[in-house]
Image 1 (tube, rainbow, N blue to C red):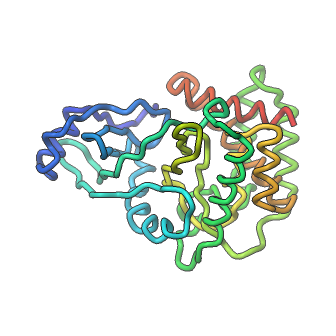
Image 2 (image 1 turned 90 degrees about the vertical axis):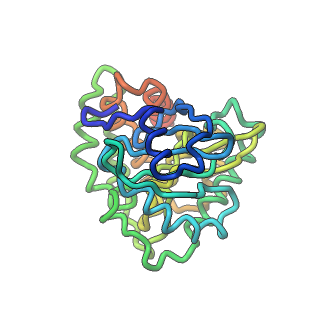
Length: 293
């Protein structure tokens, strides 16, 4: 998916396991199909998954999750990832890697939900619980990513991405949505925890019900608005309104969330156009929901 991506395969992962975790080296190992862009996944046995960064910007994600997820988990109403072990560079692979507990379920879609409005309320309660956890000493958004930082920092790449999609989307309407978000007041409250990449692919569903939220690589503290992306990534119509009502965010925060969702989608689509068809389909769906309002 990236020009400078590091290649991985089952043979490499098998060698890493044999050298560093021989107790698990004999377990079945299979690639996990995923539209995720930062990490390659390999299921290990029946209840574990090996996660290896594909690209340099993802190197620090596992260490951040190791440090903070055990502190957040007791406060959250849904299951989140549990890191079991951390591997070191070796066998030709240049970066730290990790092993997590396998979480069953499928990526959330409206079609997989028994009750979209109930799901929207449940997920809104998850994000508001996350926002309420003590954020003292948490990783600042401005240092770890731009997802909880002021939207103005994303202005140039967002406008360039909108221009790149001329003929594919309504660029005039996309620009209007973006400019409305930029005009909304910045977050003036204390920084709060946010997931940072709360898209439908990072929400798991089992038997029609939410089961887990995964991939906290974008975790930081700052403006909670970026966690509103799921309102357009997963929900629609009444379920989106149920999500908004349960979060009880003000108009400015909602507008910033809408702008963050638009920025995410328009930057994602041209970058992954030829390499990640599932991710592009999801981003186009989110963008269509945004522009239809």
